[in-house]
Image 1: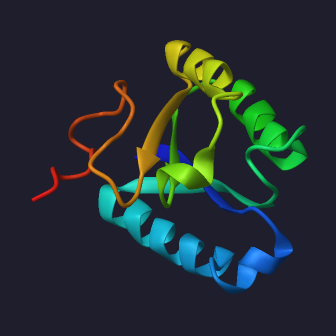
Image 2 (image 1 turned 90 degrees about the vertical axis):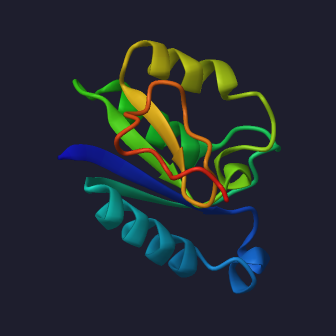
Length: 124
């Protein structure tokens, strides 16, 4: 069973009411179970992905850098991961080191190094 981390994010405390972290978490837990992924860490983040330093996101990146095996990184939708390209080089570096594969729960897209046997089905 492959290990996974979950990232649930809203940009502001006010968004929490409309984009519930709990709803994102439930969706991603179900996805992980369906794909046979063992969730070893959950990150609940309330911070914008486009404004300045992201301390909780950085904590997640540091967690991934310390791992010795690849983890699936599950996000509910692509904009929950990032909206700017600031962290793209960091995420790409982790993928190149075979420590990370990105899984987008509500999309047939996934990073190129994801195991095709665990990938999302193609959109109809």
